[in-house]
Length: 481
Ligand code: PNW
Image 1: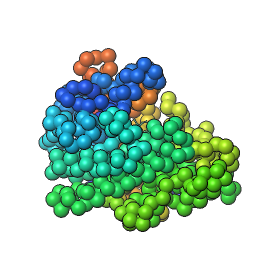
Image 2: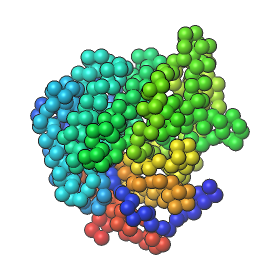
Image 3: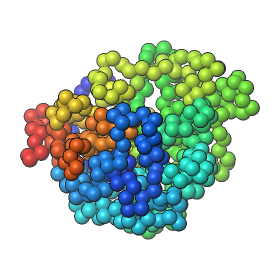
Image 4: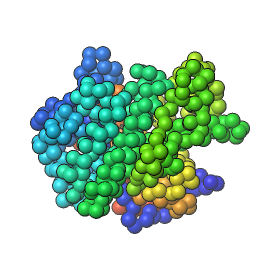
């Protein structure tokens, strides 16, 4: 599109949904309270060899387990229509299976959901945001084993039963690619594909369970959330253009094509991995094969597509050596960041607003314009910036304007946008050193006091206006206004 640099002064559709997101391990705390079982993240952070940047844990985090009212108050202040949070599998099912159902865990989510509905905010619930019950990891190696498919489906069914009368938007799994990376070291270039194969089949099974047993009761929607940055070719030479498309296929297409496309992995993935596997002396391709039944079940197993979008990369062709057996090497590409895109304090995250529009256009072209929710999007700000986070205002203003172009100019079927994150939280390996929140959290204060940043005022204004007025540059970002 030629209109990359034009700012669109228009409104979003009337029923467009604005929200913010968090995930259980990153905000809840209460890691061993009220009967909760340990997750693989509890185990990881308590290991003396854990490589968390500041040596911290999510033991208390934002203490959201004890601060439902504070969390809901922030959402009310922002005026958002939905809140995306995740359910901690081991809080609800401490040993991972329904026979361990923990009523106090269920009560926490009931209380949160009821408080949201009372405030007229729709819950959007992620079932799996990386905190696998340790019990299932110990029992059979977690996502490496097919038994996870039935266990995930049983867990999903428990959640549909307990919360489905009030939760209408369900996300099965957040960013499956991140989970493949957890198991990668066990067998690079092999484990990744096995884990992905199990994740896709687990999603598909849990989708059909909803479809069969719950849809007629509650009329909700089920999707999966995929993480995709835009991949821009380094040059317009054919090999770089193909390389960039291959990068999208390996990342978004890996999980997306089976569910939103043909039912199977992208052809280019099948071809590349098979060719390399044979040259490397494997008896068959390292990429598993779906059965005919699975292909049929995969295709169309969605009500919407969840997209997490943060940043863009520049891609060029680069042949890898056959001795390098890995998911990265399978793609024959090289990644870099365009130096012209504004940097942030997070190394992988540069600011490139139009990447969001290109991702949405890609999904529309390849998968017949499925309904999309942006389920995460945002950036960190450094300690010096603190509450005065003008860089986040720039980010949200321009990313959402590109989203508006995708809807208005390109016809993309996008239903909502969800800012990551409602508040600063435990940023995985970076601990509390990165700050993605619209609200700052004082982690040295036992009350975990939340304070709005300047961007919270901006986001509130954006939600209220549902878009951009001509004089939006004159907006004042006061929460009180
Ligand atoms: C997401 N990347 O992860 C997660 O869903 C959140 O839990 C996390 O806090 C948030 O982004 C911020 O990091 C990502 O390298 C991790 O492109 C890495 C990437 C993207 C998303």
